[in-house]
Image: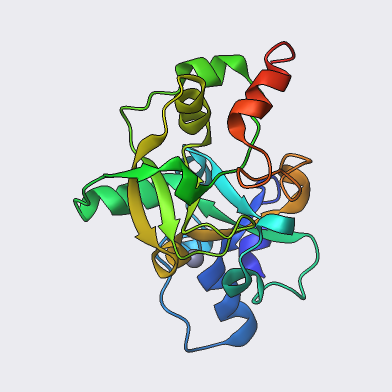
Length: 206
Ligand SMILES: [Zn+2]
């Protein structure tokens, strides 16, 4: 597909919508990320990758999204956070206080610096009734470092913007799997690995 050729070094192929349109034709909602306009904006990847991605691979896959790419080896779905944040701000959504016991969070951080810089004054993003390995009411989409920091201060709740799974869909992109961290598909969840235990075990290695 043209989008792939125009971005050889870019780890992101296109948005899920444009990918589906290419593969399955019509009946796909229009692109919300302008990933396919005129072969793509050269700054497109920088723009969407500014705040990173929430990968949905392995035990963290979401069937609603991955069913469209199951035949395409080497590509996995991820939510592009920056355009999702812009969408939430445009909608002027209010943040809510959510109990961490109700949220499935990817457990583990790599950098002490990122942990210390995490600022809980910025609300996290959770998706409600969204597939997750811990079978919790909410799935954390953005804010893993803020949650690890909050837990290290014994906090039991965090401020979050709540979105529905269908609201994530326009911001799902396809990423070449090797561009993701090696544990993207296997990372433990806060249901089976309490974050405070993880922090205690890894406090020296961070
Ligand atoms: Zn697109």
